[in-house]
Image (cartoon, rainbow, N blue to C red; front, side, top):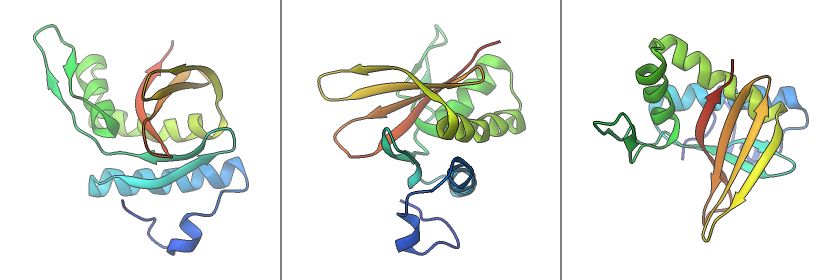
Length: 148
């Protein structure tokens, strides 16, 4: 996993003290993910959930019915918004930056527990972020929805 540029390994694991610190940390992590196309460990932190990782992921393969198989992570969110909603690359990037604020300031709407994983949906100002937790201790950003 990639570390924040300008942060040493000790400070990169320090829990942000305020929502604004968390947003700043998340935006810096998102910049690294978008630039390097690599995962970012401990990108953000929520008191009620713990650490959140930003995973670059896989765009997946689009089936004839328009659904994607195997898509996950930030690259999947970017690809889906451009394909489904007609977003430009710039608009899709702005959307993933907005998710940082949703993760920092949003409220948990619902949590689903599956056999080997959990899924939590966080909402803020008409945007929903979906996080998944499997066998690791961190949550992974896996989905995004905008409500008009």
